[in-house]
Image 1: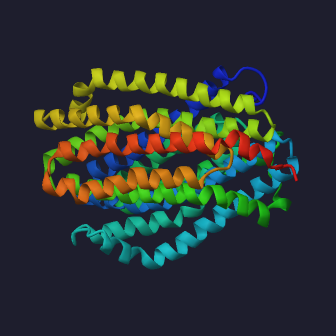
Image 2 (image 1 turned 180 degrees about the vertical axis):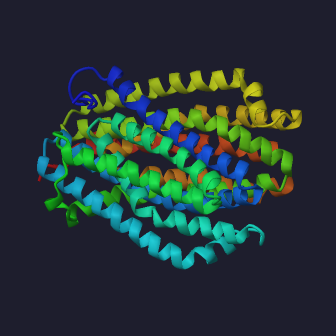
Length: 451
């Protein structure tokens, strides 16, 4: 298959790039489509509707991050089984992943619909926004089964070296999402329910595209309707890797909520500046994260194939390419930073403050690339709990302590920003030390995963 990368044979450097670029593009496109949602509802439905959609971001982030993490477990198990040429385990993992996505999404939908109002109350949403915030969340929750299905299907394709098919599915569904936003909000006069419905429908389309592709593919990840069931042993293996990663993502979301509350306390200018800078820095993050995910899959397949030398080489190449690509995009954004920030807001104070954030965040990325790639390396071997623990303590723990202690004494924007390089530096160092001490390439290769 032209979209599939052979990870266990031939050169590695060019293949890692071919694998990582569509991954980064997928994240960037998703961010652009999310921005389009907010732009449409803000422009044509009013600031209250825009606030209602924005107020749901923490809740949506918590839910999606949990299952995106769990889908990473599917990625690792399938990649490892492909490397072992164990078609039976590949099939079990693929079919189990699809059922887990659908059942997990259904459970979240039912529970979320019952608790939607209470959750929005906990977020302290203003009364004038509250009804629309609840409406948006309830409609969005109806789509959780297909939203999670798309993420798990994407993980299945990534596990065999195919990152282009999920990107194509996202591009098609994203364009449809934008068109539906305009149709529902402008054409039918809907508000937040229109934007949420468009999101659900677009995710339904992308999940169907990938599901049909899995039914028709001639690759080892082919799906058969008659085999759609959960294998208990495979499920346990997936959850051992995926749950720690999912919980890590959820705690990140919580820590970011606390940091955002500190930013909000500094006033409208700082809020606007931080938001504008975030919409620029996130592009660099997706590039960096794509190499972490690449390392997971390349190590997983080569570990399964018993090719430890290629696992170590994958780590070195992912680190080198991650540094190069991240430095390039960060440098470009910093050069054009003030002009780019001016697209969001022309206020000079907003631009100056936003540029300060960019400088701090990009300095922090000098540590983050190591944390991302080394975590991916360990997860490729099936070691998920340790990097998750290091990240939770080093990133989330340090940030929470900093906000509730140092920021309380020195409540400035620079104080908030200083916690990013500090927390990422501590985390990168701890994961590096753990990687050296446990030597996963030696310890875990002693176990026979073919049984």
